[in-house]
Amino acid sequence: MKNTIYIVTYHYVRNIKNSNYPNLKGLEFEEFKKQINYFKKNFNILKPDIFIKYIKEKRLPKKTSILLTFDDGYKDHYEYVFPYLKKNNLQGCFYPPASIVKQKKILDVNKIQFLMSKEKNRKKILLKIKNILKKKYNFFLDDFLKVNKNKIKNLKSKFDDKETLLIKSLLQKLLPIRKRKFVIDQLFKEIVTNNFKKFSSELYLSLENIKEMIKYGMHFGSHGYNHEWWSKLAKEKQEKEIVKSIKFLKQIGVKKNNLSVCYPFGSFNNHTISILKKYSFKFGLTTSQQEIDLSNIENFLTLPRYDTNYFKNFY
Image (cartoon, rainbow, N blue to C red):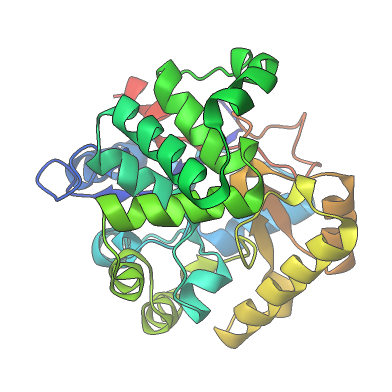
């Protein structure tokens, strides 16, 4: 526990049980407040600029410390997180994909989360996928599953049952990209809403929200432009994604000497690292679960993080 830094990852932080999406996976706001209060009593909660200094100097604080990070740019982070951090004189690192702010897009990963939260019957969703593919593309899902049976057989998750995992895998990776995007949109329209712009405005941070948060010392970094799997992109496409996200960060007031990145889906490769070094990023955050100590602090572009749920065992 001595001389280590724990980086904590948050996504949804809201009043979930009493909302329109009570099955959404996230952290209840009351639980968030308990967790922050526990961290305040037992750890040193680092300000982002102090964390950058430690990483640059490759040294650790004397007291075990925490860095708070928030992914995907949800409105939750303005409505719930920001006021509570401000009240406690704390700061965190926030990572919205640029396209959700600039173009009011809804990320496919979020469409999937909300439609699956709304419709609990997994067999019903699979049947809808099957029917959409057949009607639109004359594409037979059963045949596709047989051809890809080895990939499907190897799917594993600590958190999802087999049917949930299959749906997520089909819509995130397995189906050809054009087909899966069409299916996701059709399912979202049927199950959640067909008013994409309104949903986006309610789900994500606005430019005004972000600028206000920066004014109070919140750190904003890159989460890509379109929130894609970077390891699956050619180097040129990766660089385009990263450069577009840097332009967005400059527009919202992030200084060039203060750039950080949180890899979308935790996805990166050697090309990613070389690009980030080229543009002088100060640190990068992965989805590997481990604390930062002297054995890994030098790996400033592949720093590990723990999910918020890990810390429920602490208190």
